[in-house]
Image (cartoon, rainbow, N blue to C red; front, side, top):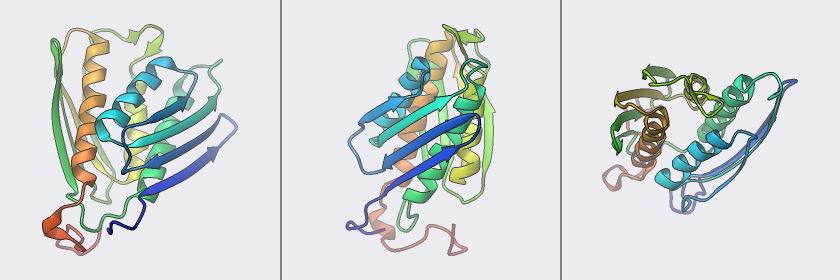
Amino acid sequence: MTDSSPRQATVERNTKETQISVSLNLDGTGQLDVETGLPFLDHMLDQIARHGLIDISIKAVGDLEIDAHHTVEDIGITFGQAFDKALDKTGIRRYGHAYVPLDEALSRVVIDFSGRPGLDYHVQFAKGTVGDFDVDLFHEFFQGFVNHALVTLHIDNIRGKNSHHQIETIFKAFGRAVRMAIEADPRQAGVIPSTKGSL
């Protein structure tokens, strides 16, 4: 990774169920431009942008008349593809972690840009919905991201009594963990952070 190489990407995904465009600048200032048709998801994506200091643009049109499943999952997939395309792993820290509280809720997220997809997700929501949003769909978002960004991701909601607080701590911690993992490690400039020599 060099200072002159922009870590940016745009990916489009078009299916019979969804039409999605994602643009990322991994060295941004936390700006978000989002239209998914799902306001609560937009609010969570804002947490990634702000706490990850990533500029994110997401435009999504999906079959919300059926339910939000395809849209949420496909946004996760496209977000992961854009991440994989934008990130040069040379000289990065590779691992990131964060604990984030919000009132009574506390979550921990740990990420490894390992080149291997793996999700370990431990969240017991206090309620199944926030407004009319099905919180089970957040697992689908993160699974789609993991499969296509090729990362190992551990998500643990340690405690919480309010589903909104629980998921918000997860997304904030995810943004912070990603920010740590993708930043340049000055002691490993020009080096792939793996004994295998590749990720």
